[in-house]
Length: 176
Image 1 (cartoon, rainbow, N blue to C red):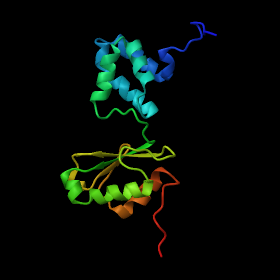
Image 2 (image 1 turned 30 degrees about the horizontal axis):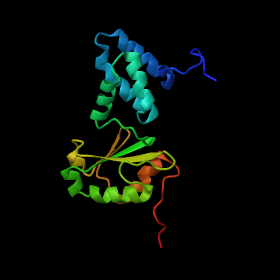
Image 3 (image 1 turned 45 degrees about the vertical axis):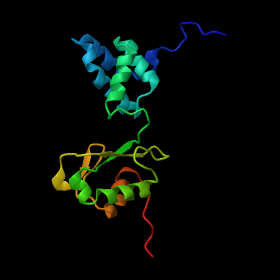
Image 4 (image 1 turned 135 degrees about the vertical axis):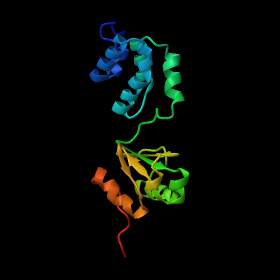
């Protein structure tokens, strides 16, 4: 049996009310298409990634061709089509950080969380990303979780830092 048009889901159903309200505010401003990146960022913050139905909804609601919406979403590296963890860990692998041990930090993070760069833990709590430079070389090696910057991080610091974000953060092996 075919659904009636009245009960069929619309593209707007893919987005929460606060994002729909933001889109309406953007549409009321001059050059609403200039808000496309801001709209996509809000969607990603809410859902941790962008999905096809989100891009379709933005295209329809903002009256921007879907090829343009998809083009913007795929062009910028900060947009993701893969779900990210609730706590996004970004580790700087720039020269200063790498020389001061960022490679060892990355190995330890992957060991503790049992994931690789670009992956998310099974419980959805953490994901690991890398960056080339945060502009905080004096604090090398630098790691950012959400909005918080950690400087001079050592591998032995990681279990305690992770515990701040998740009571079940993986623990290191017990001392012998």
